[in-house]
Amino acid sequence: MINFNYETNFELEETDQISQWISNAIIEENCKEGEINYIFCSDDYLHKINVEFLKHDTLTDIISFDYSVGKELHGDIYISVDRVKENAKEFNVKFDDELARVLIHGVLHYCGYKDKSDEEACLMQSKEDHYLSRR
Image 1 (spheres, helix red, strand yellow):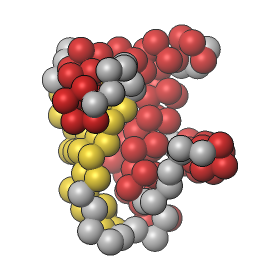
Image 2: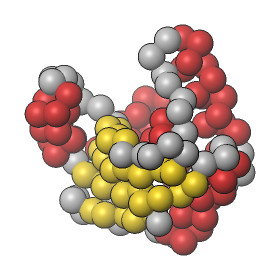
Image 3: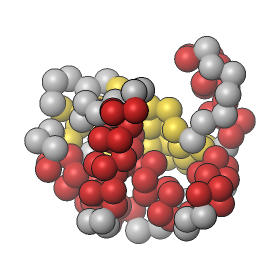
Image 4: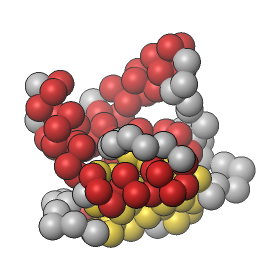
């Protein structure tokens, strides 16, 4: 089950379609959908989590906590709406497109994809692009 939660003045539109899109990606990755919680928040909210849990004193657009069991995906994905807006401006893309990239990015981590090395990041971006084309 995919849940959307809000800790800021933002509300996702078309949640049913977005949930179905994410569910289809999970199936295509040969994984099983468990409970996945998206939490939309501010920069300040996510910065606090980043410092407290990851010891990183930086702003970020997404932090995911993976509680998956094997191929059954479970977790909490925190998304800074402020950071997504800034990144959309910086990369000269629509907010909705950047938000979709971040949404699928979190789930791809749960599917086992990493993005620490250049090679991993390239594969992750390729997967993001693949699923973005199916929105």
